[in-house]
Amino acid sequence: MKKKIILISSVTVITAAGLILFLVLSKSKTYEEKEIPGIIQDTIKPNDKFVAAKSGLNLRSDSDKSSKIITLIPFGTKVAIEKSDGNEIFLDGRYGKWVNVKFANKIGWVFSGFLCDFKPDTVIKPAAAFYRDKYRKSGYS
Image (cartoon, rainbow, N blue to C red; front, top):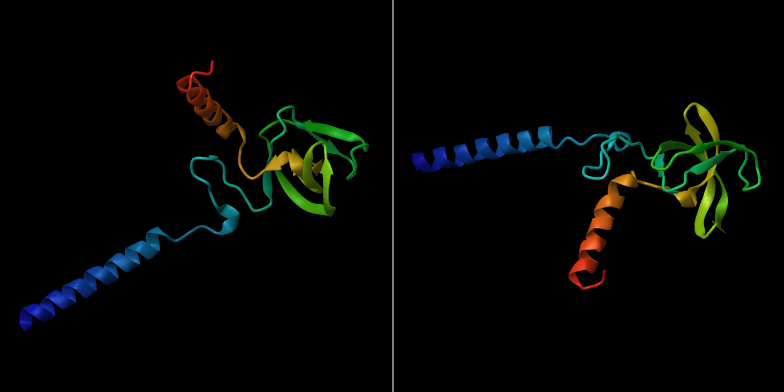
């Protein structure tokens, strides 16, 4: 009987210690500070996006393709979305909305169809290598 009580007490203590350790180690960061391992090395916030247009993305003075260009935001650069304007539209082969963003102490408008949730240059090389290897193995050169 005494061995049973000691065994049950030991299991209870170990389980409790394990639960406490799990809770301490797995205490997640807030969504605003969430990191995405393997995709980006940067800390992102929910309103952060990355420029996915290979040639860069024009930061404009208004939510219109014909409005004045403030600057060109380079490919892969992180921007912070301040607000969006209107409904989703189809523009230059993509669906999206005009969004007001902050970039390098400048605020302007970009089309969200050319933004993504991860740093795009981190996926280009692995994706290219995957398809290159796939086609080499299948006999396409």
